[in-house]
Image 1 (tube, rainbow, N blue to C red):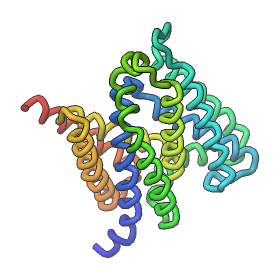
Image 2 (image 1 turned 180 degrees about the vertical axis):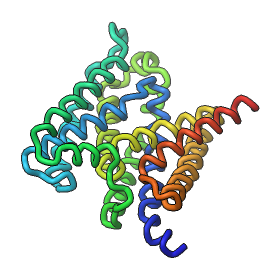
Image 3 (image 1 turned 120 degrees about the vertical axis):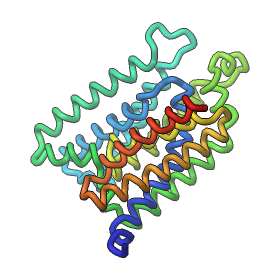
Image 4 (image 1 turned 30 degrees about the vertical axis):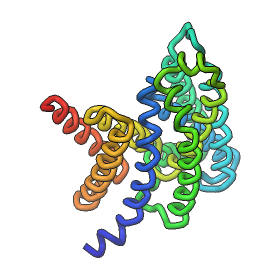
Length: 270
């Protein structure tokens, strides 16, 4: 038991912090119908990090982080500008294109770098098992600041996510609020990718939000359900990875798959 706490306490605390903000952002993503925007921004961030790695910056260095963040904010600008009242092409299609190009570009960059395969693996799965307390405190402070900003902007953001045409009709600066959403979203994603990798970032964002939609009707109860399922699934995934000696991030992602099946089954019974 002592060995379990010593090894898994920090990863679990990191997961708690990630679930807290990702479940909320995931509700916006689901309501907007841009399910893969998180995956796309995470991959853009990963491309920025790989490019920084090719330039000599470590993946965990400040320079590497700023490089990843710069490309993520560029992606936020692209997604903001592609939103229109009468879109010719669904925004989800453009998001998918950005993801595919970013993934391919990252592979091309890493093919020119020594140990590129290992670095690509690190970007996909992160280093959750080896996260330390300074990293945890940093993301806690950052996510708290972003959460406070979103709290004060919640009315406008929820309206834009639920009914963008109504938001346009009321005279809201939809593009500005879209950029605010995607830019803060990008800050969250860039920080999370360094710790848990692209795949787990996507799971944290979508799975708890979908569980909330399955089992609740209002935003508040969906958020509560998302938090609860995220915390319980993270705990179960971490425990399974410890006792069965499995990769922690991949185990948690698969655990979210089981959680979604259970929530879908409960919804069908209800």
